[in-house]
Length: 194
Length: 194
Image (cartoon, rainbow over all chains, first blue to last red):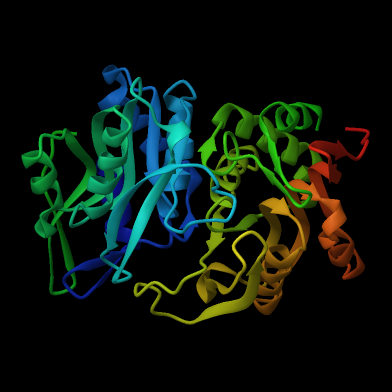
C-alpha cells in the first residue's frame, strides 16, 4: 500500500536493523485518517472472505481493528488480553505469546463466550515480526473451533520470518507494507502490485 | 445517554456492589456500531470546546477514542502506555495510576513529543471509578503545559467518588452513563436530561 510506505519513510524511525518505530502515527499517537484508509484497504483485500469477526491483541491492534470493523459491516471486534483482570471470571482460551519488543512472554486470553465454531475471523495486528502474536491469536480461534480466514498485518518485517512460518502452517497472510531490510538507516520495502 | 443505559441493563453484569462487567460490548468484545453512537454523543457534548487532541490510556479506552476522533475532524489520538516498551527511547511524561480492577499501580507514560502547550485535550476513558486514570492523564497534559478541556467517561460509577474529586480539582467532567448504586443485582442510574 503506497500511502503507508510513504508514511513509514516520512515518519518512521529505524532503531538499529530490527526495529522500525512508527509511534507518531500507528501505535502511540494514532492518525485516524490513515487508519480509515488502512481499514478500507483491508476490506478491499479481505472483504470477499465472509469474515464475521475481527480479532486482535492489546494494545496497538485495537485502534486499527475498531476502525476496520466500520468497513466490514460493523462485525464484532474482540481483543485478546495479555493480563488476567479480576473481572475475567469465566473460562477463557489462552495461548502463550512472546513480545519481540518487550522481551516478555504473556498469555493471550479471550473469554470462551467471544469465540465459537461459527466464527470466520480476520486477525489484525499492527506488526508482524516473528509471528508470535498472530500464531497465538490463531490458536485461540482454533481452540474455539472457528476458522482463521486471514492474518493481516499493517507492517510486516519479512526478514524476521513470521509470515513464512505462518504460511507454512497453512494461513493466508497479507500485510499492507512489507519491509525486507533495514540497513544503514534505510528501510527497504518489497515491491507489490497494490 | 439512554441507548447506553439500556445496553448496560441488557448486557452488563454486576459483580458484587462495586463492579459492572461490560465486556460483551465495551472492553473485550467491542460493538463498533455502539462506539459510533458514543463518539457522536461525545462530539455533541464536547464539540464546542476547540479540542485538538484526544488522550486515553491503554487498553480499553483506545477503541472508543479512535472511533470518537472521526467525529472530531480526525484530531490525533494519543494513548498513554502502562508499560515501558524498549521502543520508547525518548523522554516521556509519567504519572502513577492505580488500577481499581487489577489492583496494581503503573506509570502512565506519553512521549514528550506527543503532548505540548498548544494541546486542548479531551480525556476519554471507558470507566470512571476512583478517578485515578483520569487524574494521571490530566497530569500528563499539564506537565506538557497543555489544557484539559474535559474528562469524558463512558460509564461512571459515581459512588466511588472519582468524578467528585476531579470536579473539586477544577476539571469539567461528564459521563455518558452514571451509575449511582449497584445493589441486590440491580444497577441504578442517575437521571439525566440527555
